[in-house]
Image (cartoon, rainbow, N blue to C red):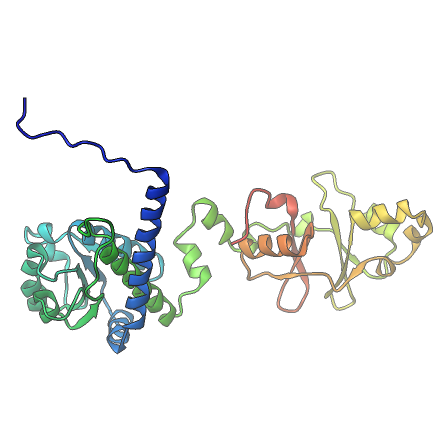
Length: 336
């Protein structure tokens, strides 16, 4: 039997667990507030380096800091900045060959003395790449080798022991996100650009250009404002899936109203059958809600949800109807 005594469990009830968890979260949140308040123009210098970079952002770090670095790499890549992660231990065994003079190396290390990270710094300098250090302070080896130093400050870790990287890694994560997203904004990266890199899943679906999913061509029912309701319904009969709205255009082809199945039902319910032979312009909904054809499917979902409508006409820059989104086309999607 081992001579080391087995630890006895210390009573730790749910109330105490929740209190401790909330304290940890508050502690990390306070660290982020401190970080935000101490940002200075060195952050802008780092933004300029990445915005003007002709090569790639090479992110490096080891341990927990390396995991944060991998997340930043993914964020950079998805927001318009070419990026890759370089494990520093692999770097000194040949992977430094991926670094060129046009690159910017972003190195994560709270202490700034991490041996694996510090070993690659002289070679990076020799290659000619710029270095951005995300570290605790400016008085360590990493900071001294860097072109720009982004300090997260001397933060105390969370929890009873104050040992496990927590507050510091949260601060690194926030700094990496801020840097990646501000660079993206400085480059003029758009939601449509973002959609190009996210074609899969619910997010990709919402970012899909509306032109790719709207009903168009023969699927639309378009009438002139002088046509009668009855004549319009007879002329625009379809053997396939019926679109639940007639798009009404004026003499210039510009959308001026919609007549829906609900409008037809109201005429019949109110015994206004005689208006079936009246011009559709007399019973249509004028100035309907529309969406431009350069929008995304997510925009359509949001508009359908907020306006509580079932049919959304899609128009071009001149206001001419070119498509339609029906509520049944987007069931299962949620607004951004």
